[in-house]
Length: 548
Image 1 (cartoon, helix red, strand yellow):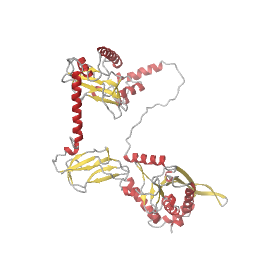
Image 2: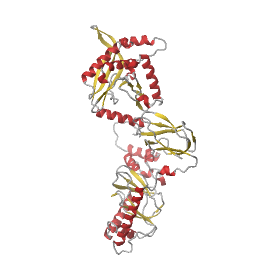
Image 3: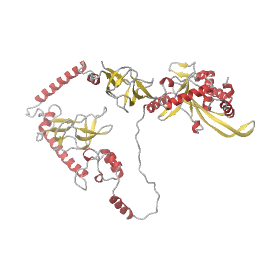
Image 4: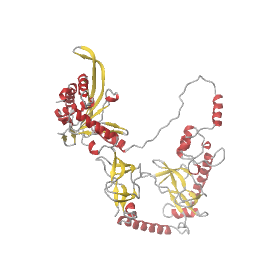
């Protein structure tokens, strides 16, 4: 029996995933433990293995597409097995049957009302005639505006042809026909707006009495008078005439088909649409045609003649160029960062404390430590160790706000902010207070490497109680960070700089570094944060105390 495989929740904060790559294709044999796909979560790109055996019968989410957790990812079963029921879901449920029954009853009532509405012989819509209504093209759309008609009354329409471009509350979209026949009537002219379900057009056999069709429809609801029909036809005639005037090409006298966006860009750039060749369906001019348009030599010469005939003026050097931009889809990691940091910044009342630390002893101690065989310690490792020791002395900084309670963490797990190609991840060095400097250095190097190679596991990025962010390696002297919730504080580490300092009443050259602590005021008061920084300063300025 076929098994449905859903989009897994690969991290505690994952709400949706993107299929980065399929490692199996439909028809392949799957063994338990085989890697099905690489899935990009909000934290990393991870390999997803199969827990089932069989044949891959269906792929529900193509490469590059994003879907919520628990969406249909794939179906595995026996070769040739019918899976249509699993793909389409259960059909004809009790609710659907009930709704179909109600719809049938309502339809019968409408037909009876139409039959009783008057003594007209045209009370029923002729067979083969379809009344097209203003569609609901977005979930919030209440009315639409016809931006452009791509077919005119009398034109032959095939199923799938684009009838019109309709502007909704969100975008201008192409509306295609689901019927074949002749366009008998246009109910909403270009530039006009109407509610959803208003009569947009009528399609049917050539020669059909449109008045009878519209009267038949109006008999079940709003009844149109012959006078309003005449006004509508008169308005249609005027609109058609003006529309033809607007869209006629100087060169060939034919209508120019262009999307509304292409028309707007062309107007902004002063481009004559009759000079542009369209690459869309049936030669329609679309956005990229306007963006890629290059004026001909004749146009350039004419422009030059106009400019040369203008009054002479002092030469002005003006910048020349073309404006441009690019929309890039946000990755799951980028969206997760935005959500987490936005939530932290706007829910936790941040305040910041900054100190300047003397780094002369730290530089000397690091040089001595690194002179030992197979030993490599960075300044960041020293700061991490100092923070872990300071947190033991100031447990109120090692807390989390839980609304009615404050959680005091007895363990110390240090989060280390690491920059990756798509954003920022925070691997966690667990029980950092129990590790030596070299152990911390090895752990950070290993975790950072995994993060940059997208091989880090979710468990290695969970559970931090305090976070350190170091931009000093990029030459940043001082900065503030947003708290990595549920932590109560984060330390921002600046660059080490040489500058004149006062020691023993004399001005000498010294090395200093600025440290800024961001605190959540709900759990950490100003005095508590200041005391923590004093202790941190002591450990950093006296590295020998961290070697015990």
